[in-house]
Image (tube, rainbow, N blue to C red; front, side, top):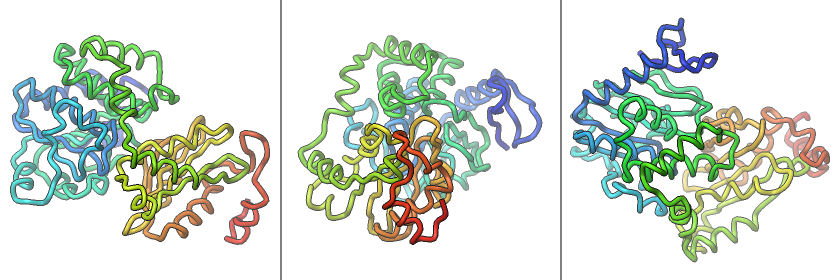
Length: 377
C-alpha cells in the first residue's frame, strides 16, 4: 500500500495510482502518527550520499532523537568529507552486512527512506530494507518510485527532500527544529538548489528557509563556507585536470567533462571531492545540459545536469538510471570511451539538439560523428 500526492491537486492524494481518497491533512497526519508511535527508527538514503541525502537524514535523525526515539542512521557509503561537521554525523553507520547491522534493521519498528525511491540506489542494505516486515516510509522528490513502500510523502516539484521534511515537522511540532535540526535542513536545501540558483526555488521556499535560519540561529555565510570552501590542494588539482577535459557538443548546447582513474590517482584526491564539478559546465554561456563521466573499476558513472526546460531524467533512465528532471545519474557497464560515445549518441532521443543557445545548430563535427554511429538528426 502506498499514497502519493496527486499531480493535479497539491492537497489531494491517490491510493496506488487509483481514485482520489485522501487529503493533504490526512496523509501528512498519518506519517506524523507513524513517526510518533515508533520507538526504534532506521533512517537510510542513497549510495554516495549528497547534501540533501545526508542533511535530510541528520535533520530527521536529530529531530526524532529529541523526541525520545532510538534512531539508527545506516548508509551504504560514507558521508562526503565536507559534511562531516554537521551535528550528529558521527552517528551515521556505514553498513557492512554484519549481524549487528542486519539486526539493527530487523529490530526496527519503522524504516524511513530518504531522497531515493528504489532498492538498487540504497546499495548494500537495500535487500534488508525492502524485505523488512515493518512499515517503510518514503520521503522523496524523485520520479517513478517503486511500489514497495507503505507510506509516501513525495512531490517531484519540491526543491529537496529537506523541504518535504520541513512540511512534516510543521505538522508535528516546529519548535522541535533546534540548531541540530536546522543546520542539516539548511545545508540539504542549499545544496539541492545550487545555493538557491535553480528553478525549483520559490518565494515559499525562501520563507521556509528564513524560518529554519531563525529557529536554528544559523549563519548562512558560515554554512556556505563549511560546504563549499573547504577543498583540499588535491581536490583543486583534480578540478584543474577535469576542467581541461571539457568538451562542447551540438553547437555548445551540451558540455561534458571526464574524471578518469588516472586523474584521481595523479591528483591524490578522493572521488568525494568531485561533487559539484558537473555544475561548472552549466556556467558556460549557451550550455543547457552538462554531462560528467566518471571512470570506475566496474564501468562509467554518468551525471546529467540541465537547466530551463531541458529535461535529462529520461535520458538517464535509458541507461538504467534516473533522478530529477534537471539532475539525474546512470551507471554504464562499459569503458569510459564507449560510455561517452553511447551517451552522446543518445542525446537526440531526449533533447532537441538541432539548435543551441547561440543558434549555431549542431556542429559539423558532431553531425559527422552521429552519422558514423548511425544516428539520424
